[in-house]
Image 1 (tube, rainbow, N blue to C red):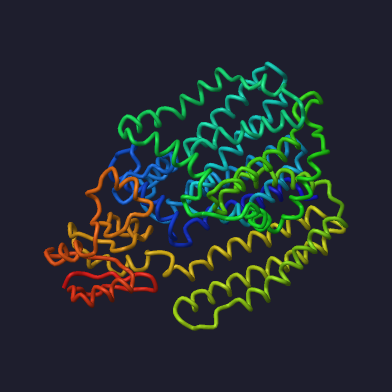
Image 2 (cartoon, one colour):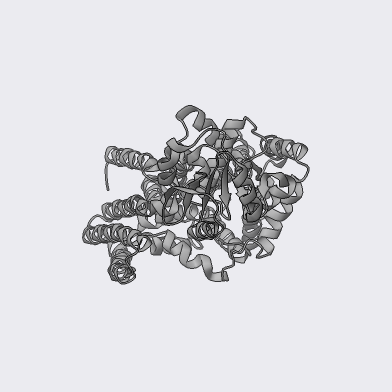
Length: 546
């Protein structure tokens, strides 16, 4: 065991590492640049109802994260750290919620371990340091889950039950404002699954549906009403296209096999993968001593929560790795319980699997390095070197944990967590080796002093998600639509349809700038279009009119 004081010191160190790591890297495409730019434009325009990306209506997601980030930009300035503040803050709060729920259900030691597992799981840490919508959504779903379980464990009909259930309804509303109807769908689907598996309808009687639904609508509905009034095209696109068509069809070209999320989840739980799996299996027969015997079986509900979300996204026609994130907090609580009860000899088997994975991963990564020494390959080699260092240190921590696990399994688990934290932080920091390929930060810095205010800036045959944020201005799309297709259909004048039309306009502009691929640049050179190269990198060429 470790003392309470030592545990708090470790928590403070982890918090310092967590928040300081938010600003060490430039924003990368596509998501980080996209969501930072939407918030920047919202802050600049003062229009908090209609989200816009590059000046074009963008209705794919609700606005909660845009609102918070835009407000943060006003306070802290428009920079990389502030752009990631919301996912970083909600990710850290999610660690606290997991720790508090684990402590309430299984005891203080299990609570500390649940928090440690969640904070150091590779996917959770990494997504908590990326400017995407997934972490905020995951936090509010986790909060709804925790509040629901605490309400079910409270005395029936009492103030505590009502208070926790209203907190759950509020969290579901905020999850809905973060990413849509899954904020309500996942809790309901899990409760339906639990009622069927357990043949127990009693939790439904304790939901406080009337005041809860009123609170849900009071929080979530006003923006949906306001944006629909301002933009009559919104309801059909958002509720039908972005929910049902995204789930049922492959229109978004994110087609993956049904088993896609299995390796993603196991890899995302590194180094706790096998321990979390053991905790999930044990949840089916494990009771929770801190809850009354006639209340909900919390461990089984946590297991069903993970299973329902996993199956839901596995069945979807649109899959991305981070979709599975809301599963991890529930598994972390179950893993914390499993670790708190785990004998040292059993923990050693799990730690041995981590060491073996490191011994396999290092030579595999070394053998996978590119041999062609062009600019892109050299960036990959540099990043691979960072990853090999991270894997080696994490493997060494696992070996140390294996040595300590026999006598002090909790200290062994914390040593593994420290190694996992080093793995995640180093992997993120090393990713900046790919910065010139994945971010426009550097090339925007090279041309910043050259740009004349008011001169048009064209984006020819492409759209770099990070460039407008670093330029602090929008660009005019040329022969490109992609995710802007719906917005451009509402406001078609915001794009130049053809390269020929662009060339004509370019020749008539007294001064202008453009970003394009090297291939497009060479094509326009062949057309004798007057251009002067301002900057170029492995992905982009930025030119000015001579």
